Image 1 (tube, rainbow, N blue to C red):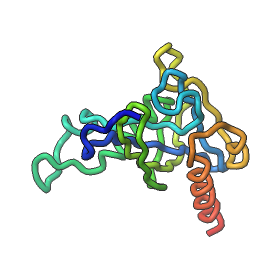
Image 2 (image 1 turned 30 degrees about the vertical axis):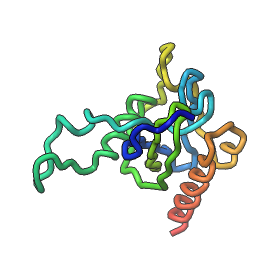
Image 3 (image 1 turned 60 degrees about the vertical axis):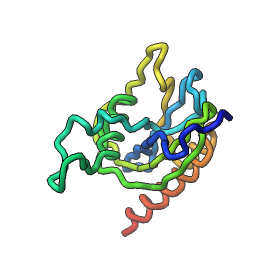
Image 4 (image 1 turned 180 degrees about the vertical axis):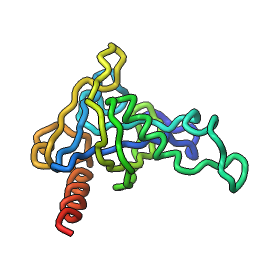
Length: 166
């Protein structure tokens, strides 16, 4: 691992476990050229960009204040990465890790209901995602998932099944 130059700066990333009412979850396979977790199965997501907020109206509470930016960013990422529209996201957990290139990353992991669209993977050579599957929690156990992701799917599955019983 390379040296971390500024210990106060992090890459901020959101990931989203998109789910359907039949308790299936969208997982995607990362391209082999990715710096972090190449070729592993994950859930759609990506980094927060200043463009996600800088050109939008600021809060009525004052200049240079923006609210709901993580949700805006993750909805954009889901639309760009897999072509789906999602409902209201809910935070499952957060985590941090240090990429092989020394960049510290903070990940906010959400779950959100599928609303519409067909999964479309960008087939360009520089695309980040190369495959997808809709899986149950049990089926997800057969995939080479990024560490901790199976626990996130387990948590979401438990929450959603408990809601259905209510």
